[in-house]
Image 1 (tube, rainbow, N blue to C red):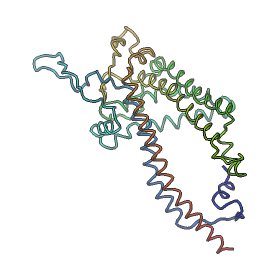
Image 2 (tube, helix red, strand yellow):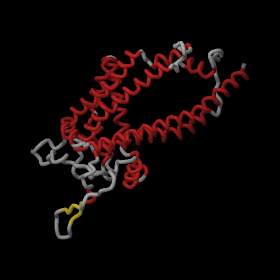
Image 3 (cartoon, rainbow, N blue to C red):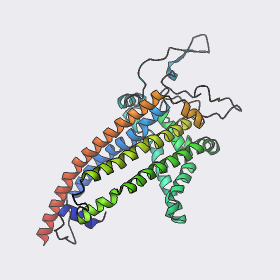
Image 4 (spheres, rainbow, N blue to C red):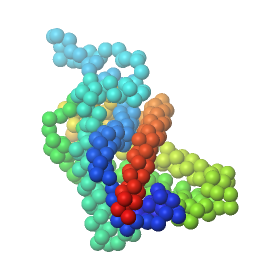
Length: 359
């Protein structure tokens, strides 16, 4: 959106733009205060809730006794398995996951793995940008796939950091697994997730085009020229079509992206070294399908193993968790708008007053 468009939205279509609009001197203090408030809010909503918490629901096996429930008899080296806990799964609610993380490493444990995640994100952006600059913007979708495969060690290490019982003192770059073994285990689910993401993005666009809905264009036309429809943007037919496209996008995410992500995360979790315990009960053998004896089997879960050992109860738990996260994110977005809008109005008003004084 152009700056002139923003100015017309704030000042009105009949206002003559001032070539040098001066901001109040207190604006930078307001911006700094906003950063102090908004950065933690962004980390909680976009990283902790949307990225970290669902991983526990993806890997938890409720019927598998946690490692802490294994004990040893004084005169025996064989473990005695206590009766499994009949309490609710640890990933059954956002509050229970928070308590689990807090007990493991304090409140800061909600941000576990953030350094690895940021490194992975920056490296992905750099690779995609470089490949797009060298070979054209049309290769960007394939560049994202290549970046995911090239950085699979980082994404796998991030999963291990998140699900590990206690925070490790080792930096994440020392927890990288051998590239050949990691790539051999994950290239298929990475390819599946890449295809699912692009299919889930394409289907709503096709549906919207067939319905005559192109929301970015319609919004731009409204802001630039006024309503493009005879009865305004809030026409019942337009709203119904927009909601239909939104519903299709949501269904595509649930049916395509979430299952592909579950498969990938569970396979990456199966690569967790044996010396690390997990924060939630996790069946490393995937129902005795995975053999960790050297020379016998792969030593990690396959796509079939990851899919068939994820029961309907786990799906319900994961989707319920996503629904709660979505509601909290929407509430946070509304609060953000309520927090920012008065500041924009006040700053814009004071800027206009300064312009009038200068004129």
